[in-house]
Image (cartoon, rainbow, N blue to C red; front, side, top):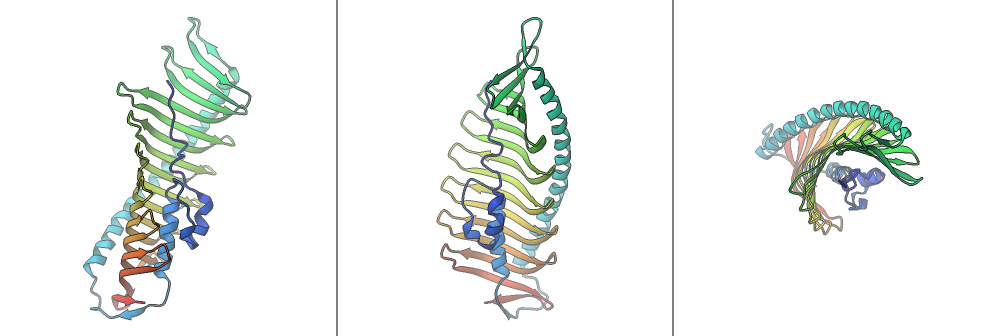
Length: 330
């Protein structure tokens, strides 16, 4: 059976090279079928813009929290709990995947050195094909079913796939896939599916840097029309979480959106947003955004809109002062 996987994560891997410039200049981020840091960089840049500039305070009733802000703060608390829970889970998953991958590397490499294997009854148990640059080693069970496929580049293990399944309706599955670099795991994914209609799914995936997770995503789905979505994602910088998001979607027309997202700085929230959208023409919208200082809410904005020419406006702006939330204007 021949199964082609998505990856490693080719349609949703982060473009790390654009991150730093993107935060300062979000318009420089290029749409290239990437996710997470693209999202984090753009909305992070907008968050910085939201907190920048001189504002004049317009007094409202002291200490009264507007219902819109109260709802947004409650939503943030729920999202932050979900983010922290998933972050801890990802760290544990990464440790387990790293341990598994290192054992697998040694096992598969040793089998590769032994070469082909044929059972006394003539059943092919291990077959190696390819050329000097790239070789494929396939391993079969006694009943002739493929259970593991490994790719070697210059005789060094590059990636391994395990757990193949093909259903009667044409669905193809791969249980686990692991990529290696310098004998260390570089990426890992579980639950790949390719449906007969062209839809592709991945249950979860982790990218590694120095044996630590650099990003994580779950619930990836790519449709035949070119649109795709990810249920949840986390980015890590210097081994610490920098961005968490829920409900990423990119449509075939090039527009994309994020339902909720939290940016982190030294493991403390730096901004929270809901309803981020970027249209195909470059227009960006954010339904709600909270800016934080030292991990505490400091600014709220609603109805943010940024046009491709750089024009930016917000329908509502509130600043948290020692007198409570007060409406502000530029």
